[in-house]
Image 1 (cartoon, rainbow, N blue to C red):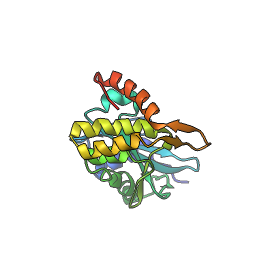
Image 2: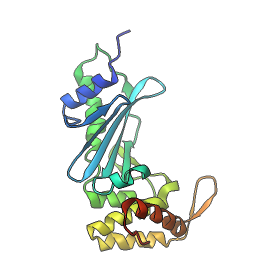
Image 3: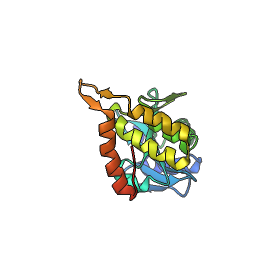
Length: 206
């Protein structure tokens, strides 16, 4: 059996083919971090239970994300909409084998979020958003918290339209979670707003 490539070697290939910039910081856990003009970006590789290689991608707001790092960095997770995992690359595989996997996954995911306004709309979505072969991962359980995050972005961007849409969602009543538990959206959002306000050092009215 051919020797499998190390995680660091796969990341080296990702940098070499332009999927991840040379400026990215790569750690031993299979995580690369870098930033664009508006976003804090994170790409991860993981060894799945069946031995194949998979990926995840996160797009966070560069302006407010660092202050909210303990709350997920005001970010959205992007995953493959269908299983695109492949056998872990080996020394016998061509570079193109890993390159195709990396470009189709992490590479494509970098174009999922258009701008900060789009990020806000995605975060404020009650359910996952599908675009092509990619999807967000937006758990219903953190919907009230995400509405507050999106509200912070909308106000910073001066988007009164999106702000009004979010405020309407905040007043939409209760949320039925898997398992049958009900959550009052407005009450939950107010609790999250207090925590975010403390982290940001500014009021977050909801």
